[in-house]
Amino acid sequence: MNGGTIVCGVDGLAEARPAAELAAALGSRLGLRLVLVHVLDGIPAGTDESVGARQQQAGAERMLALLAGDLGDGVETRLVPGARGDTLAAVAAEEGADLIVVGSRATGLRGRTLRSGLARELEAATSVPVLVVPPATLSAELAASRNTGAPPLFQGSDTVALAITGDTASFGIGDWASVFATATDPEVFDGTEISLTGFVAPGKGGFDLTRLIITHCVIDAQPASLPVAADDIPDDGQWVTVTGTIRDVNGQLQVAAASVKPIAEPKDPYEF
Image (tube, rainbow, N blue to C red; front, side, top):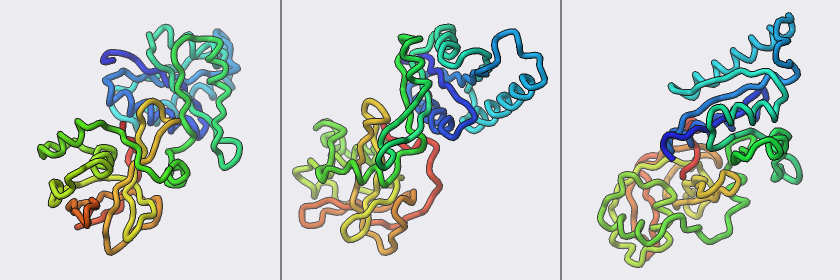
């Protein structure tokens, strides 16, 4: 999909930032151009000379500039007056968008239902796929709620075969979780050194280093975890970088931590 475009609808609400951050992560990984679009809803085209309209526009320009600066170089911005859904759909058509990304609000029991009025408006206004992003990064609590007790397999047998060769420099937690779950000769991996980043989840005899893996859509993200043996266990949900060695303990693989370094949540918190 290299050379395509993502259009992300943003506003001044809290749900805009997670949508923009995920759009930027997808754009970076897939080689897609990112355009952040703020629609000045309630200001019809051609009526933007009033004091109120100029103030609203100035605030929106500052918000877009700040958000684009946080996301890094190459992010484009557009500020367009008009009706929210129709205008964003029109901009997506002008930009040749392959995907529209919008934010949402969590509603319902334990916040498991996402609501986005803009997404509903876009359904009737565009044929471009719309991705609705949760209002905040998926958390350790959500990872626990989606844990079925059986490790999901994010990769196939080729991942284990590649791991056996020692070519694991690009492996993330999802790759290693598949290896840990399916390796028939765990002793082969004993002594492998790793450095991985994830958040802390409860585990037996230590903690589980966890990451949410997106295979199709952020809404369907599933947790992948690696058991870590460590003397000091950070708080649940804390992001850490673990450096250590994979060990075969009675036929079960685990990570023996040499260091566990607390870090801030990364800008790209998911694996793909």
